Amino acid sequence: MSLVDSHCHLNHPKLAADLNDVLCRAGLAGVSRMVVVGYDLSSSREAVSLANAHPSVLAAVGVHPHEADQYDARAADALSELARGDRVVAYGEAGLDYHYDHSPRPIQRAAFERQLGEAARLGLPVIIHSREAADDTRAILSDYAPLAAGGVMHCYPYGADQVDWVLEMGLHIGLTGIVTFPKGEEARQVAACVPLDRLLIETDAPYLAPVPYRGRTNEPAYVSIVAEAIGRVRGVDASEIAATTTRNAGKLFGELIYA
Image (cartoon, rainbow, N blue to C red; front, side, top):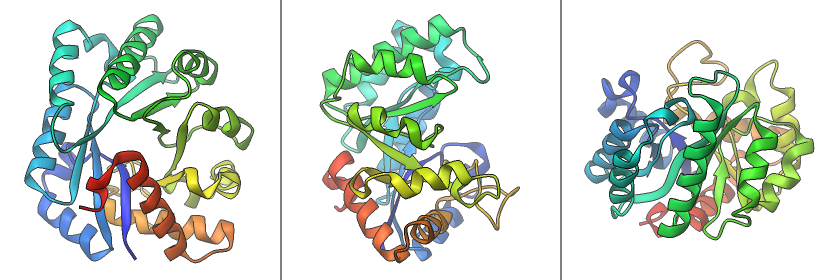
């Protein structure tokens, strides 16, 4: 069973300190590719460095809404240069987070719009973070929809009733270990209704470790648990979820998923 962790942060100190063992465990679990996602300029550089050093790692570069106030002209130019790297497969994670509001909302929106424009200019899919910001996310995306190179709403944060508009924007749905949580019924409802050809699986490591590892540091090896949980919801074997989501990742992120 070959798996793709479509969103993780091996560039986070909690995982970087134990990187070789983390990669080894991922390989033993059947994880063939991991997309390491930047959340600011420094972590984006680290994502590219990791992708250049490890065949199983690919990179995405961008600025998370928490750090949107850092997305100035210098950062934008540097990220655009990084995004041209051979092993960069997406732009992001970019978007809106109205739960924490670590950056002012107007600044979040401006950074999101500019990164969508850069992704379109570079022909890259977009990895989108959206939390408690469905209306503004939808409004901004509508100016670019359907996204020419596609994208994914990672760690899908909304209910099954919102899935249709996300798909209409040209996005995939990324599901995490939340589908295993006792209080994850909404995520399981989404897992049951998303068209299989628009589904991706991810860990968002080091965050959101699935049951039975709640409270521990998450890592890419645990994406197999996400596949198993979705398989149970849909009444299919985990190997079918693994094969389908790997194929979907290849269509979205390109041939490096397989190469």
